[in-house]
Image (cartoon, rainbow, N blue to C red; front, side, top):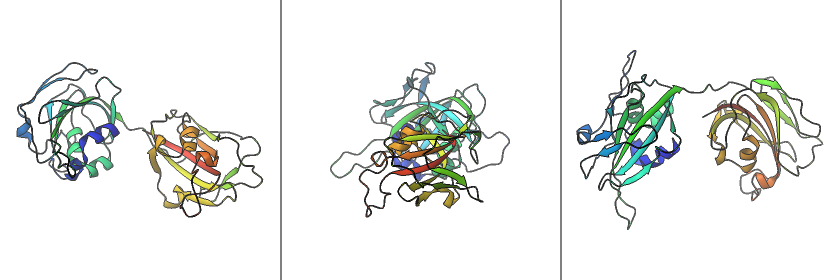
Length: 312
């Protein structure tokens, strides 16, 4: 998904209302949008799931609006809202037909057909929901003016194949699994009357290395460093136990790529399982090593309680 959106260009998300809008129907069908007549010359030759299709189109291809339609229909089940589609893409320069990106030989992208995508780009959402697995979609993305002194970027043509679709993994409301008794000497954790974990650091020594201790061992899938996880968490400074951040305060779970946070989280949560509650004691070097009182970041060694509720 991240690689796909990097190719689609920021202008794509500006068009959110095309594609016919929402219609109540038992089995919605894929909705085309934009200047679809400009895709009439497009011819595709399917070469299987691990090799990009042969693509022929009239050049130059230029569109002013994001444009998408199903070019060849698959034989699988129709894709449903809130499913996750496995896709591969091949992208071309619309001016000269040169290849910009080809993900077919790689692991499939994951495109989550949720409300976030629907509000961000109804064009893509409405085209995927109702399309059949095995279908090949064409997406033409408008060109963009170049930065000062740089040449303009031409329109792009992106061919997308839907390889599979399945229901999105369930996101838990709270940890589920087997309780684990941690060793002595670590911060202690107890839930308050609202179910929020409260951390006590009394008598806890400064860590010499990262501590990643299960308090509840979940039975879901193990998470990878490259996954995006959904969590609830509380963070406190080890020196005085003062809470500096908590998703529980907002009442909303947090989602983020595991490789986009502090090293203590990336290293400490990789390999943990969905449903787990994990105690992290993070040395300053793996937290915010340059933090000062004026930086707005927590200073020193930190301790977190992280409930892993989902992964995608």
